[in-house]
Length: 357
Ligand SMILES: Cc1ncc(COP(=O)(O)O)c(C=O)c1O
Image (cartoon, rainbow, N blue to C red; front, side, top):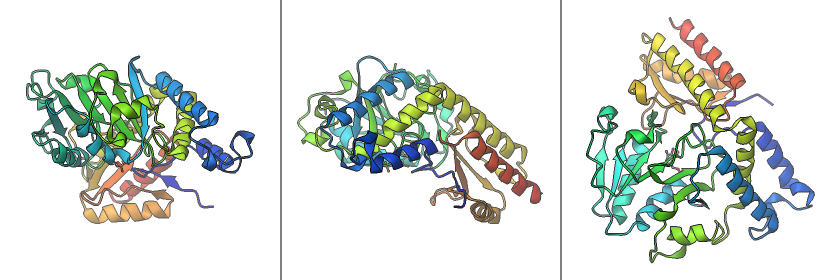
């Protein structure tokens, strides 16, 4: 079998040890004679999986005691309907938009929350907003933001830099890749299919006071979902099983500290190389907010973009074409991109650039 190096923005590469365990469990889960595909969500085995995820989350993330961990369906996109339906109408809600995903969220929120406050910072200097002197968020009770804009490669890791107490954060493409604290956060969510597993499950972390009484249908009611410990109805058992394996793998690798230092190192190497070769390529993202998860850049001669992607493919490197809306190149450095894989890409990248000098 040809070796493939998957740098896709998601669903992304999984650690090989996780894939091997899934393969085994599909045929015979823990020597039970049953496939993991057949497991009941009301079984003791599944309860154990949920308990392990809970323990691993507390070990991996610096979670406060009053946190609710919910594992829901519908992807991150479903959250765009769920969240505004779980905020009391007398409260104010805002969206701090720094890229495509945040924009989509604001458009969806607006359908439920008519007086939504939208602060659109796309194509503006982010420093203006991420300064304790900035007062534009002050009259908003809950403020949504996207920590990593997967398409544009714009990332804000320091949530304290926003002058706001109750943030709601879409961390779909960077949860698990750096440490953060919950001090000024109310709700965090992430589709699992980047750093944390496969599509089908969305990780939601909710502070107790974010879960209010609302008269929504059951599956749109965060409080009920939290009280049911993610089994209000049949949950995506396989995706949750894979999430558990990934959290175990993360703990074994050295926890979030390990992934943070890996992602700092790998992203720095790529950005330095891009900047050192500014006669041939450019990254247009403000240096301070360049994403460590998705490196977005383009060659000055746009015919090189296609050449780069095609030649990479011939060399087994896949998933590096920029999003169709922005073009160029996007290299995703999720947790599963190990040193060997990264080095293989860098060697290819350096050769490509040297040959075009
Ligand atoms: C930051 C971000 N938010 C939301 C989404 C949408 O996720 P889903 O497909 O799970 O709805 C994506 C998908 O790539 C994403 O990167």
